[in-house]
Amino acid sequence: MNTDIDKTPPQAVDLEKAVLGAILLEKDALYIVRDKLTPNAFFKESHQKIYKAICDLDQDNEEIDVLTVQEKLGNDLSRIGGPVYLTQLMSSIATSSHIEHHSLIILQKYAARKMIRINYEAMNMAFDLNTDINETIGHINSGTEKIIETLTKGMGTPEFKDLVLQSLQDYEEREELAKQGKVSGIRTPILNLTKMTNGFQKGDLVVLAGRPSMGKTAMALQSIGEAIEDDHHPLLFSLEMTGVRLVDRILCMKANVSMERFRSGFLNSDEKDKIETAANNLLDKGITIDDTSGVTMEYIRSRAIIKQKNEQCDFIIIDYGQLVDASGMKFKSREQEVRYISQKSKQVAKDLNVPVILIMQLNRECEKRGGDKRPQLSDLRESGAIEQDADLVLLTYRPAYYGFGPEEVGYKDINSTENMGEIIVAKQRNGRVGTVKFRHNESITRIYDFDNHQQTEAQF
Image (cartoon, rainbow, N blue to C red):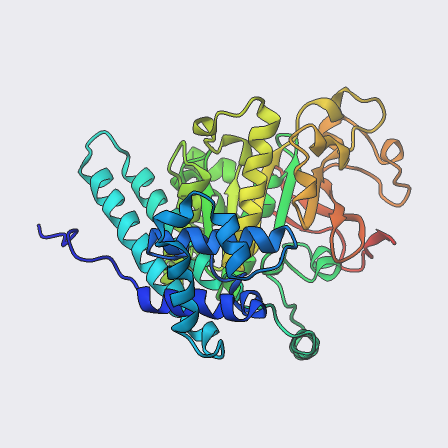
C-alpha cells in the first residue's frame, strides 16, 4: 500500500510572507484575517512565531510595527532571521488589498495538512487489531468536523437584513403549509400537541421523559409513524429493546391489533390480514432502527451523519439516554455523564438540522412526593440539568397507574382515568407550556387524541 506520506505537505510559504508583510505594513490588515488564521495555520515555524507575536500585541492593545514585534519575539528573533527578515517581509508587499484572498489559501493548505494527519492516524488505528472500528470512525468524523470548523471560522456572520428576509421567507412557508392543513415540523400523534408545538422542529432537542410504563416509547414510535406518512426518514437508536421487538410494536400500532394477542400467537384471520397489510405498507418506508448495544454519542453522531448523507435521516430518536455509553469520558458523577449526553444530543440536532428526541427515564423523586405524583421540570434537574439543553420538554403521566381517579388529579369533566394520560409540555423555548390529555390502549402500544373536541389546556 502506497500512502505517499513522504510527499511535501501542502503549503503556501510565499503567501504567508505576503500576509505577515501586509500586517506589518498596515495594522488594520490584521483584523481582516484575525478570525480566520491562528498561528498554527502557518506552515513555516518562524511565521507561526511572528504571527503569534503580532496577535499577542493586539490582545494587549499595543501598537504593531517592526520594533514592537521585534521586542515581543525576544529570544526567538534571532531564530527567525533577525530584524532583517521582518524588514524583508514588509518590502515584499506593496499593499494589503489581497490579504483576505491570501489568508483563505493559507487556511486551505492548513486544512489539507490536518486532513493528511487525521487520515494517517486513522490508518494506523485501522491496522491496530485492538482498536474498535467505531473508535476509528469517530476519530475520522471528529477530525473532519474540526477541519470544517477551521475552514468556516471567521467567514462572517449573516447580515441582519439577510436574517430578516429569511425570517419572512420561513413565515411564508409556514403560511402555505397552514393553508394545506400541515405544520412545519414533524407531526406528533396528538393533534392538540402538534398544534401547540407546530410539530418537532429542525435543530431542536426534544426531551421526552417519564417514569416506566408512562407511554414514552409509544409516543416516540407513533411519532415515527406520523413521520413516515409524510415521507420523512426516522433513525431510531434503541438501546433497550431489540429492533424486532420494536417492529412488533410498530406493526400492532399500525394494524390496531392487540400486542398481547400478537405475542401469544392467537390472532384471528382478520387480525393476521391487518398485520400483513401493515407489514407490506412498512416495507418501503424509510425507517432505520439501530439496536446496537452500548453505543456512544460519537457512534450515534457518526451513524446519523452517514445516513443523512444518503438522504436516510431527517429525524432521530434515542431510546433511552441513560443507556448511552459514556464510560470512556471518566466523569466524576452520573449527573455529569447524563448532562454530557444531552449536550451532545443537542449538538447533533443543531449540526444535522434535524429534530432529536432524547427519551429519558425520570428517577423516583416524583413518586416519593405526596399528592398526584405528576412529574415536574425540576425532576430533570436530578438527571443532569438536561432541561437547560432541551428546546422542548415533554413529560408523560398516567394517573391510573398510581390508582388516582379524576377528582384526585383535578379532573371534574371525566368519569375515569383508565386508559388516559397526559403529555405535560413543561418547557417550550419558542412557545407556551401546558398539558394535553391523550387516550391509550390497554398495552400502551398506541396513543391517540383524548377527544376530537378537547381543547389544549395551556398556560401563558
